Length: 323
Ligand code: 13P
Ligand code: SF4
Image 1 (spheres, rainbow, N blue to C red):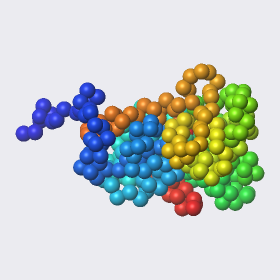
Image 2 (image 1 turned 180 degrees about the vertical axis):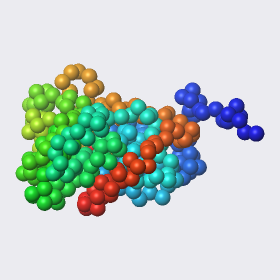
Image 3 (image 1 turned 90 degrees about the vertical axis):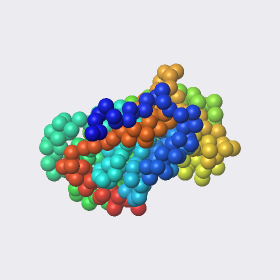
Image 4 (image 1 turned 60 degrees about the vertical axis):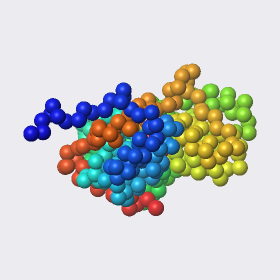
């Protein structure tokens, strides 16, 4: 009889092989796995990924993959979205503690009350939220398509926008719509110092400032260009500028440098002399943990089926509404 005593012992950090790239590529073939990674991951993880993208691109890839196993190198809500779209696939997240301060700033109970106070409103939620919040939403959006989606809603239809107040304010400015905002935010994008960015600009007058819409209005006001991580990356290629001050998580700079080897990228500074512009959740994933997740086939993302089904509809609406 096969007892727990005879089950193979899960590998631990002490067991990881020397050539992790080769070992991961071997496991990819063995499991028929695909590695989806966000731009905020460590450069090593970006280099081993099959697909690298922003939240919208990663959702699209998750919706169309033929792999049996999805290894999600990102944060929990991203892997959860992949699971919502792929209930029959094994979805692995290298570190289950890779959460998101923005998703955490919108607890389901409090949001249910908020929603009940605005019964005539539809709910558009930024994908950076839990499956429970998605299940209470009508449409999901990302930083790539939030403006485009809000513009498609009839003018007389009131809207709750959750959970990011900064992206919400930016969408209000871009669309002229009056949105009811949930007051959530991202600890990483609220760490940038307007004062230190202005000082940097004085030192590098030729630089363009590019920023993610999760940044606060005083930072966004100085930006030459605002967009999702994919949009920022594309902009660095099309802009004639040779120097950029980058106001988002600095993981993206790995791709900016790879795709523009002759250009210079300066990470926008935070309020303190720390690495607090690095997302502490994204950076919990490491190449070692990614290997172990594939080897041990865990940690796995799971959720109750009724939550998954309710969360699926607004994600599908987003995919249909964004070109
Ligand atoms: P993107 O939509 O650019 O992927 O943003 C994701 C994110 O977490 C930003 O903090
Ligand atoms: Fe969440 Fe902010 Fe990290 Fe993005 S950067 S995953 S919004 S905490």
